[in-house]
Length: 304
Image 1 (tube, helix red, strand yellow):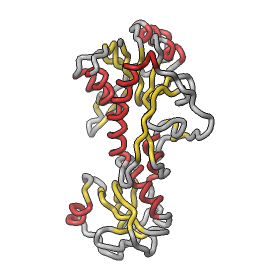
Image 2 (cartoon, one colour):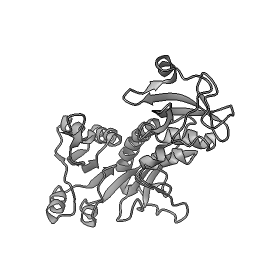
Image 3 (cartoon, one colour):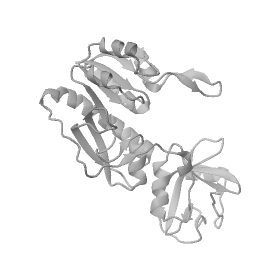
Image 4 (cartoon, one colour):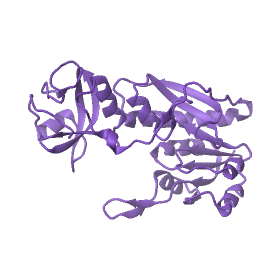
């Protein structure tokens, strides 16, 4: 098929690769514009931009798709389908209507649960037992379109957003390839009105750990916000990012270090910290971290 690909971050790259490997013709790749990054604040291409150029594909990165000129340029590509995954811009109706068979979105949740910007984070933070991928026919509403295919997967007890992100990206790449093969035979299924939830964008204010909360909630917060923005706490005035954890046995004053293995007391139960990061340092597993900065039993972690 002749496709337009629309995506921006790392999550989208395996999908682009899968479409190319499947032999589809990529008429153009749309992504967000390069933005300043790094110490020098030089413009850096997005992951999809870099990968598309490496594949020798045409890259377009308009700031908006609202102008008649951009919409005409998009329509002139004469695509069969546009495949959209984590693109980052709203698509006007003229864009949605331009490809002969419309725009297909790869969404990282089991719709209608977790429509919106941060479905992977929210699924973990809410303690969902499973999540998955939906291939959705796009319409003007926010992730409201009918679903063509879906695939569920369990969320593992110690899985972080980073790990689940990578699994779902691979799943999405396989599922969209299958969907395009079967597209003439697929029947779009409207989303039910029941069970709609919205995955609002993660705010950094959500990252402070409140040790008075139950351990299961603190554990979900740590795993759900890893790697970004990273749940945090303080020890002796220094900020620590907490990047991996699991629920553990133990009780004590909230924030108290109960064992040398970093079991930390919560309002109910305890969590075991598995991966940490000091300000200005790289992330480290617990054993490596403690060799450089021992944390004595009885220390209190705070988030003030």
